[in-house]
Length: 178
Image (cartoon, rainbow, N blue to C red; front, side, top):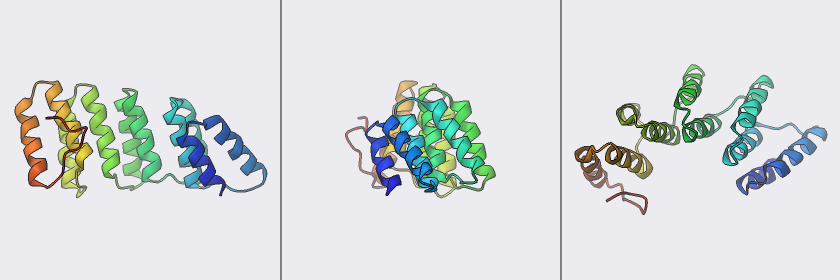
């Protein structure tokens, strides 16, 4: 019950209230789990408190509560949004070391980070690796790459991806270019 409320508070950007509830939970000797920590880490990232998210991540692992793909993906996304792609790569390395399979959200975040850093060729490499590893690209994957290609004037590549979306029956949304 605590975790559900903490998660809701974090989504509403009431991170300080969520932290208070977390403290109350711990004081009552109710053990937080991976979902509790993931909700708080996400909340910290949503409000731009990445350092606190990392501190909590470290605390979580010290307490032998192991992060899952969602926890890791939140950190990858947060690092990429702050332009810290190298740190995001470190999180990916940790995921791989712990044999956690990356999901489409993780890949999308990394591609987005590379595109924002004008490293579209690296984003494209990630796009291709994702496919080779059996992770199916979604509309966000395509949108990210199409916008990335357009940003660096690689219009033919963008058009080819847009056509590929159609062939794969991936329906463009309001965020899709063209």
